[in-house]
Image (cartoon, rainbow, N blue to C red; front, side, top):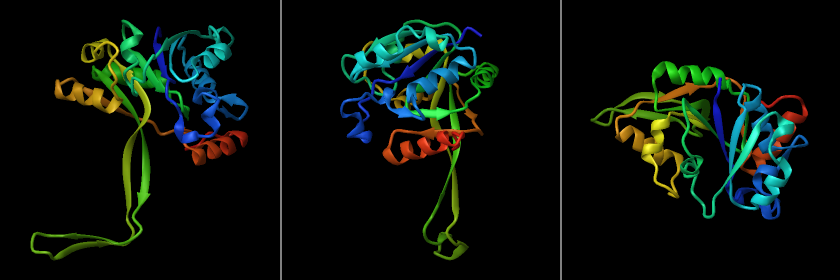
Length: 234
């Protein structure tokens, strides 16, 4: 496949304090493995062999643990952010790439089919493809819909609202680099909006499998429980 990957692992992880006071978020353990190791193993299982990892906070600890990546079946290189560059700025440190670049946040656990996402990205000729998952929220009260005269036209008791939300995985074409400046701090939503404003095609890839964000204490505990029971469910 020849797909290269970039894992965004430079964040401070302040939502996980005090756990991350002395431990970088990529090394936070989930079921006896650092969360970043879960991500790398998932990508390696889909044929990714070249992985760049962006680091900032306590970077030497992450480098010491993972080394060159050989034991995980990949080659790892490190991109050190000397100041925080947001959730997309490290892409500007990656250098040039051909074909597509798979970008993943380090604090998620999932069973994303990277090969299928790449195929969809290519089929659509997209500049960027965003992996999404469906989340359902329920309003705590009834919801009314009214017309212009204030007449109730629909009444729903505690309705469910379904959203497709970004899960922290992206496929990017080389042209995306044209929308980044060197050493620029930028978050992924802003970068994607730049592409949309420029008329570049941005696609969605619906992931129907497992996904969990471990960036908050409650979610980390949930992930520990799920993986310990042999499941990494949503």
